[in-house]
Image (cartoon, rainbow, N blue to C red; front, side):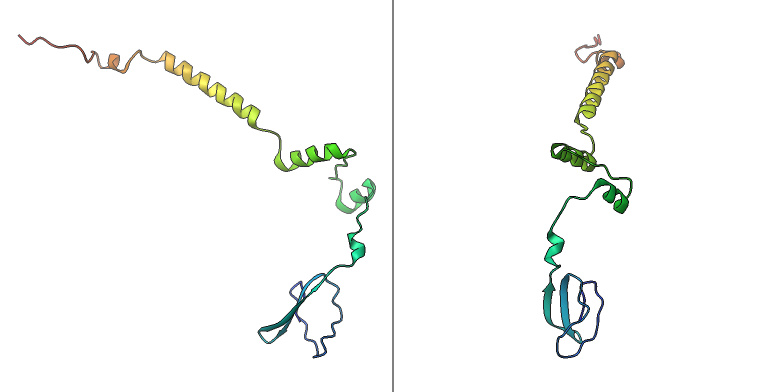
Length: 128
């Protein structure tokens, strides 16, 4: 028999299993072939969720616990912790600064590319 954790134990043919305290799928195998798969659910008492005291939570997890009293603030707190601050405002400001810098560079350059060549395309030379 293969436990949900991957540990394998040899059992007799009665399919009486002792020590199956893990929740998950138990696989009954013979050599390399799977005979059957059974699911073992955790006790229903583990599904009764009750609020924990902040001091008990800090003792179990550590001092990095941030208690939130109001449920409305919880959504925002989780969002900020997972996503971080909103970045659209600094990015928009940076884009505007880049556009202003580009406009300044465009106006400070030469009037036309032809002025660097020393003539214009419309001029003709007289070769009498």
